[in-house]
Image (cartoon, rainbow, N blue to C red; front, side, top):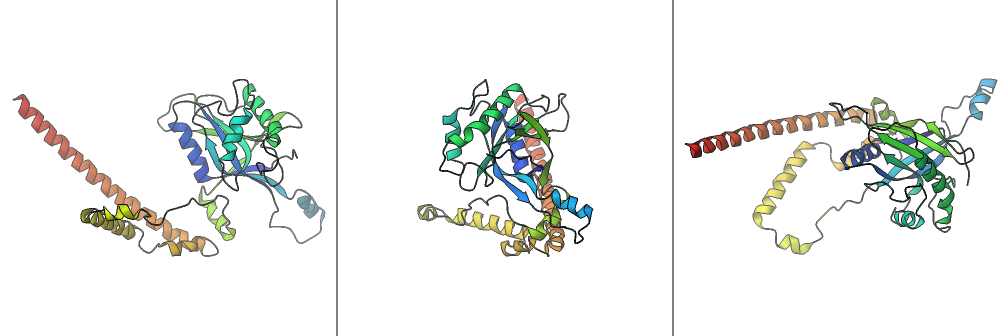
Length: 306
């Protein structure tokens, strides 16, 4: 296996948010596996002249980037290794067998609260063992990325040492180098976060598979048992959803890709603002109804005491 240095690590905003959510909602520390691919990216802004500066620029390309597209979170620690950091090959093989197509193992992560963002001795042992034993799992299956790169990516998630009013999470990415036996800190680009993401849609290509969505009810028996009131309620709810997304049907979402994306995203932001306004109005109605319920409760309680 090659032990090439990574220039950076990329992860989509929803994937990063999902990992943080799983970590924050768990009762304790967690760990898990990272899936994706490692690829050479050639810069598209190559100079036309053949000067010495352009030669130095071309010598630095292409860029080796590890892209995280999905993950598995165990909800606990020591899910595929023991307390000494030794890999449990049977447990790891079981996790990799359910990874789905097109998901290559590129590393792992850990989430621990109120701890420094630096690898521990056990995490060093896990990374070293993971790199050395992955090829022995199954030589006939594509567990590794297309460049035959070892699963060298390691990310630490943590929380601040002092409690804060706003939930804050910190993370730091590393590459474990088998040749030197050290963790090298790497920058991590979060895709689709911030105003700069709009330029990405000029040459958009998905890096994560879309989830399978059921477009209809396949249970005909359930339809037959659905009474008229339920059908009316479902129809009313559907009309409400359609009114919120009026003018933004699924067919028009294709405009988010290509040269029209810059103009279309502003319209989409207006849609979100309208939906947020409706949610705020709904929240006020719920607050008023809650006050009325509490008022009735107090009146009834006082009447019983009298």
